[in-house]
Length: 167
Image (cartoon, rainbow, N blue to C red; front, side, top):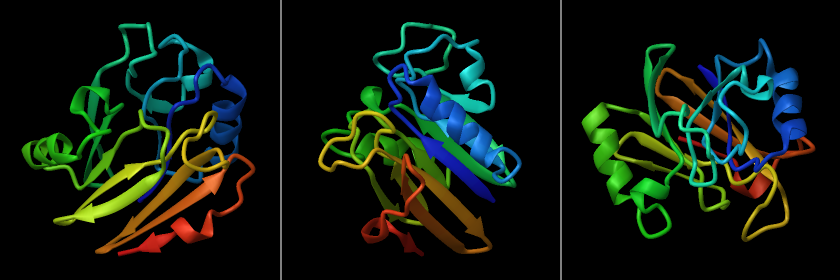
């Protein structure tokens, strides 16, 4: 399974369209963790599984998504309803409740990933307005058997090496 995960594009169609074109046919799913600030039927989001962020005005976006991709359960949310700036505890409970092995969220504009009890929790950072670093980022997640590889990339598709890991 290979996934593209992006968040917090805040109206930048160019960034998410460029990613969709680059990875079309190369990933099993494209995920947008909210704050696109676009309408739910905007063509720029047509290839993405997308959720509603705190800056998204279109109520047609779901607050959360639970998807099966290549037999893996994925939970997607923006994060603002789960207090992710304070703790991942609410997301951990939601992962247990849903059986998700992959939890993707945004909101803080800060990239990060950690494995907790066999579940990957990942924030791809912001593709437009990063916090804590200069690079605008997105993530690629690959899972094969019991190996999970996370790679963060800049909007120019350069690997953010100090953040790459496999478990």
